[in-house]
Image 1 (cartoon, rainbow, N blue to C red):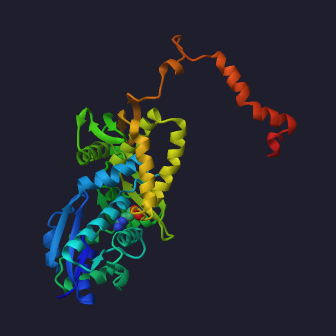
Image 2 (cartoon, helix red, strand yellow):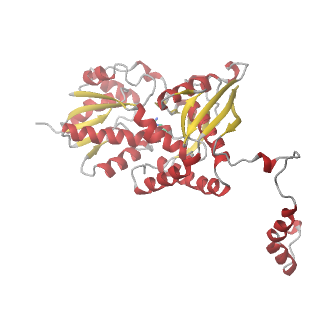
Image 3 (tube, helix red, strand yellow):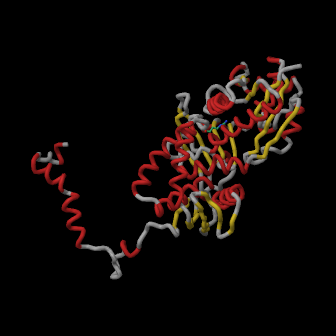
Length: 404
Ligand code: ARG
C-alpha cells in the first residue's frame, strides 16, 4: 500500500498542482485538508477540485469558531501587532492549520504532511516549526520549495498536461491569503514600494472617496478582554467579527500598507485589510486604558511586542507562548465594559468608554468644585519627587542646552 500524505489544500493553482506532483515524485497517496478560517469562498467546490486534481480523499474542516476562540482572541487580548501595525491574521492561522494537518495525519495513518509554501516566506516556517513541535515523527513535504516550476506559466502548462483545472483567477498577479481576521496581499505592482496600491487590491474595504458621508457608531462590549456584544446584542465571536468587518470596511477602515521584515531576512511590501482587527484592537486598548494601572499598561506593552514577534516567527506551539498567554489572561480579569467607536471616511475613533471596574475617578480628576483631590498634599509629594534631581543638579552643574 502506498504511503499517505495530508496536504493543506487551498484550492488554488499551487496546491492543485502539488497533489499531482507529490504523487508522481514520491508515489504517495494525497489526502487534502482545507481549513475554513472564514476567508471568502474558501470552501466553495474545494472538495471536488481536490478530487479532480487527483486526491484520494478530501476533507474540509470548519474551524472558524476554534480559530477565533483559541488564536484570534488571545492575540487581541495580548494587543499583538507585528512591527506595531500588522494584526497577524495569516500568522495566526498557520499554527491551527498545522494542528489540523497533524490530527488528520494521525486519523488517516499518514506518514507525512505537506503544504504549498515557497521557500521565501514566513508561512513555511510557521507550518514546519508547528509540525515539528506537535509531531516530530511526521515528514514534511513542501513541493513549492522543491520543484523547478518557478514560472507561473510552467505551472499552468503542468496543470493542463495533467488535466488539472486551472482556476480562472490565475491572471491576477497578487498573492492573497485570507481569513476572518484579515486579508493579506502581496506581489504585482505592490512590489514597487513607491507605487500607490491600486483599488483592485482591496476587497473588504471601500476607498475613502466612496465611503458614506455620514459617520456610523458601534458599541463593543468586552468581558475579560473578549468582545461579546455589538450594539447591545450578544454575539458569538465569529459573527461579531464578521459584522465589524462589514461595517468598518464600508467606512473604509482597516487598510494597512507596510514594509515588513520577514523572518527569512527579506523586506517585503504588504497590504492588509483588517477592519475588525483594527476597530476591535483600538476598542480593546481603550478599555485597558480605563481598567489597567499605569504599571500594568507599561509592562503589558512589552509583553505585546514579544508576543507579536513570537506569533510572527512561527513559535506559537512553545512554552514561551503559553507563559505569555498566562500573563495576558491574568491582566484581563477586569477588562470588561463597553467602548463606543465612530467610523467615518477611513478613520475609526474611540469616542467613549465605560466599565464597572473603571479606575477613572471623576471626583479626583475634575476641575469642578466637587473636587476630592487634596491639593495641599501635592507640595510635599513634589518636594520628595524632585529631591534626587535637585541634589544632583547642585553637586554636578548641568550642561547648557546648546552644549548637548
Ligand atoms: N506577510 C504576511 C505574513 O507573513 C502575510 C503572508 C501572506 N501569505 C501568503 N501566502 N500570501 O504573515
